[in-house]
Image (cartoon, rainbow, N blue to C red; front, side):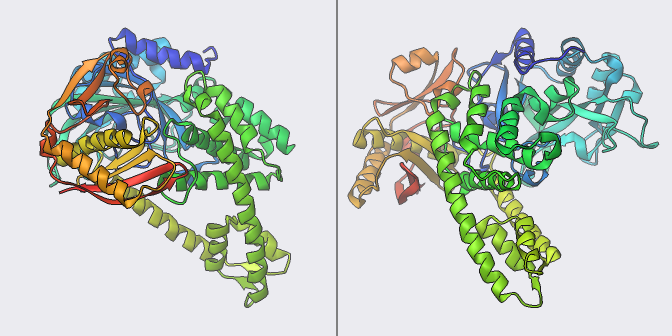
Length: 589
């Protein structure tokens, strides 16, 4: 198999599915719009949930893209050869159009004819069935039609079902693997093993059920296909590198890090990988058109955490100069042809990295002073685990730093106690993430639609009050409340807050119809429609929501049918979100 470049792999995917009648859509933001359930866009299907539930997509029933994704649930795993917090997901979707037979045939065609794998190298898994759902013989039969033998088709229950714990679209999936040819690890060896014989390359999800709140399943009115193939891992695998950090995606940044550190990647795998991964993720968060600075809440907290891990690992490499901006330039230059927002926001990226690196260095210096105090009062020659974790959590001191400083004074560290505190902290973080995800990705209820419409009205009224420089910087909607971030350089006065509230309620009282029309992006812009990130929408057709003469926005929906349906609008709080960005929290009563 010949080597394949990043550009070639992207084009292979997109052109293949365009040849199958799919509309190519741009990647959505990594910072979800109007989605209270997650901090980041974690999969290509996430921005498409309204359409998976039946809303009409401007691009039609067949769409494809390469989506920027961020997953932070396995930050601790970064450091091996394949885990990344930021990655690109190649995906295609059927929104109530084709289903298992067509998708499996195309999967086989792409793997064998486009990527060059032999039929004999493939292994697949299908849903084994359970008390509620039958065994997926339909998918297995489709694979047999492509020439796979029963020895290449495996059935599992746990690994071949996709769905959210709290309900929504769900269904069986079929995963594709490449058999390395290594001997089986035993009589039960299968793609579910971790023995290294099989490598996963692709997943086809068949959303054919709807899970209700009581846990029961019923057939989904619109059967969908949702697939995903990780670009970085596929690129590494195809080129025989076995290490995503040795692909061309990291080449320039890796070489720059070797230059500034005077150390070789091969001799310092874990710190290099953590720096390369976390810095790339930070660049995409900062470089997004909805980019946010590091902070102590929500996405800003995750960004800060990633950067501080990167900086701590730079210290391990004995790099004391401020180098994050230099490394970031490598990332920007590599990806800007595909994601031009990185170039547009280059100055913001560099400035925020410089500020955070300086801030954390001051924090580390404060931590050194705290360490002196700890050593002065240590009892029994041991720093207890809780204190060691406090140094880590508050001052960014990794356990190794504390151990090294303690050893210089013949003091030990309670490592088990530290690990217990760390694990408790991780469990709390996971619980928080689950709460963030709970109940909501599939929530496009009537109440949420009303709140979505209210954000459009409030956005228009803010621009009426303060001018066109006011722009939406994000929103967070649940069926209980709304949160709206907008660019503005000062605190609103109580009188202005009340005026805004009155203006929104006046629009509601007028009972104006909310009209949705499909137009080209050029037509929408010519009519004065605004959009948070118009570059994320397909250029052929977009949805434009118009509220009389009040508001005209490019948006994916869903919305109320009439402003009179919204009820009474009340602002709970106006506060700072970050530098130059204000936040309004409000309810509909």
